[in-house]
Image 1: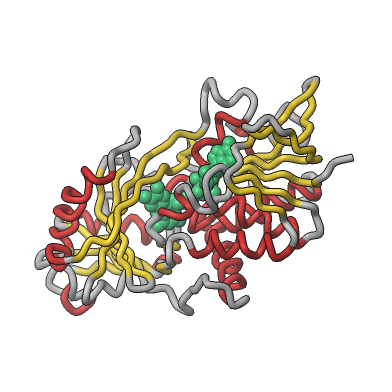
Image 2 (image 1 turned 90 degrees about the vertical axis):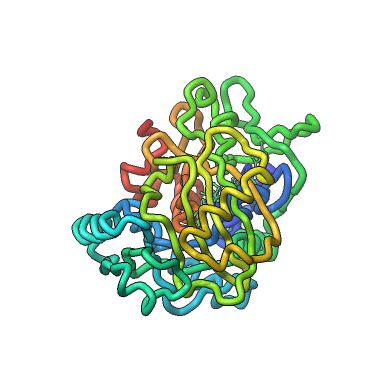
Length: 365
Ligand SMILES: Cc1cc2nc3c(=O)[nH]c(=O)nc-3n(C[C@H](O)[C@H](O)[C@H](O)COP(=O)(O)OP(=O)(O)OC[C@H]3O[C@@H](n4cnc5c(N)ncnc54)[C@H](O)[C@@H]3O)c2cc1C
């Protein structure tokens, strides 16, 4: 007899939301998080809920917004404005912004891209430096970076899920069968099904994935500042591409709850965040001159779980009955995570009844 129907490994946005959905569906759920809820990227991101440009992910984003709306309406600490602030892709080269507007008009017309020339910019976003042009998109809700993950974890706990924080866990196997999870302390906890939602650390926990990991880490550093007059839009340098990996360093600025998150890096190795404060501020000042005098209140680094094809891996792990995975959201996990968690929850509970697009199936890789 299993103590739990489902054990979840990882207390990021995916694990926390999945725990809430499954416990609310009546399952006995236990979640293991080795550090703290939101200790990874889910508590340390930039806080932009935005359209991810890719049509498959855009659908996850659309559904996530509805799930976020529900979370905000429940009276949790998570807050979502009724209208998007707008996402302004900015560039010092006017042709880049114009090209982005033209390309996105074809690729994602729902974003209603508008090219904003350097001359027009002061009327649209007065905090930007002279000479900066942009492409304005109808997407972008700024949120406090950790708020949703904490709200989902609280909801899971309120629903009766057991949250075991400070426990390093791995799927436990006996005679080739999944039996539950094994903790670093040696304790084994029986569970009928296990969901690995350990973000960039997922490949180490899935049998067969460690040798040729389908998910790698891309480290991002974010500096927190307070600006007397922050931008009204979410700002991102045009050159940030869909996988977030075209270059090591690209400007972004997201303001929520009085704090502005200035980012970010896209590095293969774990950086010392303190070394990146000055370069990030210098890059940022080229776009928003007020950053020169801004008070720095914090700096944080975390790893994005970037999958081999830029889309998350969701669903049963081929070859291991009752083991499931949901990870690999790269730079879009906050924008798309709740819908992924909902989909995988359906698969775990109903064993395949949910309609999962083939492009997201965990076995595709
Ligand atoms: C700098 C930066 C900025 C970002 N900005 C945005 C943004 O603006 N918008 C957006 O949509 N996305 C953004 N992202 C991406 C987003 O944050 C991630 O895709 C998302 O948070 C991943 O969530 P997750 O739950 O899969 O993983 P994580 O948040 O990494 O959670 C995994 C958890 O598993 C735990 N864990 C790992 N191994 C074990 C184990 N063996 N036992 C127990 N627990 C374990 C970890 O401690 C961690 O808490 C950003 C990412 C970075 C790095």
